[in-house]
Image (cartoon, rainbow, N blue to C red; front, side, top):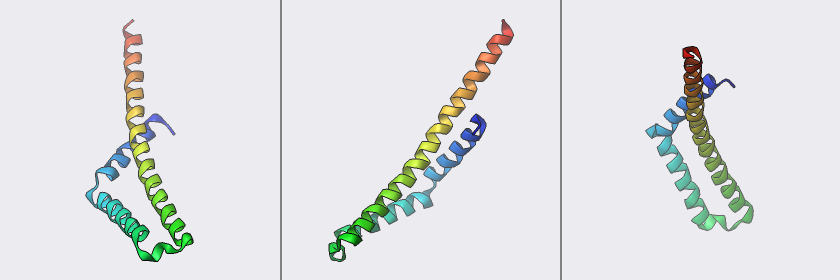
Length: 92
């Protein structure tokens, strides 16, 4: 993936993280999973394991989007440094 593509992906990821609907959905799903863990229905160890896996997947999804956003910032800095060094070389 080119630095430019990483920047675009990072910008899109940041937009997702800032999106009120998506934030609300993450919170709602996480809350429902917490309720499922605390409910009497989860005395079944297999059901508990399924809920824990669902929470882990939700966390991994959010973490991946955050990583894309951070990588986009890093790629932007790399591009800026690269442009800066090209300008300096031209001046010499």
